[in-house]
Length: 86
Image (tube, rainbow, N blue to C red; front, side):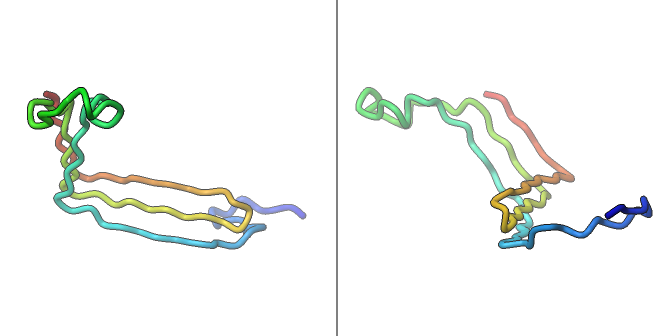
């Protein structure tokens, strides 16, 4: 079977099992030191641990799609992001 390059998607051999699209508006992601998770007993005062960075997704879209052949596609498209390094 051959395909003509006409900017249309080729037919998929496998079907889509799951598709989700999530709009992220004013979502923040804070990166914390690994000690917080691996050795909590060594850090009794968790408030003293400072974050490594903070990422504010002001306007973004997260898309996930899985197929019947167990392959997956994951996309994060951002129109506006603020990155703060601490």
